[in-house]
Length: 337
Image 1 (tube, rainbow, N blue to C red):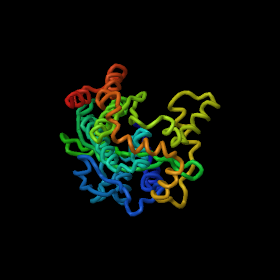
Image 2 (cartoon, rainbow, N blue to C red; image 1 turned 90 degrees about the vertical axis):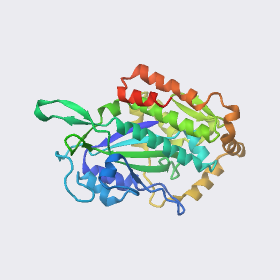
Image 3 (cartoon, rainbow, N blue to C red; image 1 turned 45 degrees about the horizontal axis):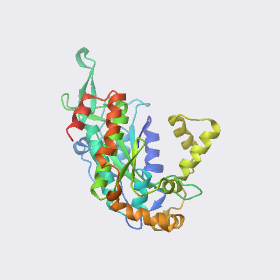
Image 4 (tube, rainbow, N blue to C red; image 1 turned 180 degrees about the vertical axis):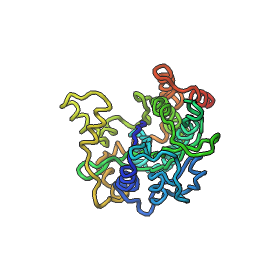
């Protein structure tokens, strides 16, 4: 899945970094996945490697992370600071990663995210308002920070496995014609979220297929062949809670369910569990047969019903029919086949 949220104050953006992005529900037994900088604009700003708090906070304040100079001309209090594009792996994939201990999945996931974010970056625009003009100009650059998390919010103090990425894009882009920084135009990217979600699923499924996994269509997403839906439900306790509460309140709309999820979630504990401790808890919850099925899924191509591209292209076609996807995104996507 792909979710999009934005912050409208530097204070909120900084708090989100401190309380959510840079803090997980677990510690990594010496294998911490730190945030990392990406994007052509990050290169121009001199940002590379791990995300540091000082640079992140300076960008929240519309300042150059190295020189401290103001970047975009407008610095109003209620400007949009960041856009958080959250990419979720299907639950069966998270189980293959954690219960199946298949570390290759992390590379496949990050590769699919980064390729999709690069496609989105190529569609980036900036405003042109000089000499009476009122139009947008392609800039094809942005600065984003990648944060990989491995769990859901906790239920009764314990999170479930859920591999996901927060791709946090700062609201700035360099105008190559006027040679200055401007606020970005995110309208087309946000509008085409359905297409981009399907494109991410297609890329991710294709990479997993190359690792030996069988891919089966599952609504607007996909599932790994051999991992039962009931097993996924066992490790989707927050979803079960939210759906039950939505039924009780008569809520059916997806956005309203999302708000319900935010209202009912537990806070992150003061003391994080290690990933080894979480593995022990998750292993105890699954039956021997379920664990064996998860481990065997990496050879599931023998039983798959369709290959990765066949399984996901229906979603792309559906998006083309239902949404006004920008011509540049269409052209870029079609060049892949």
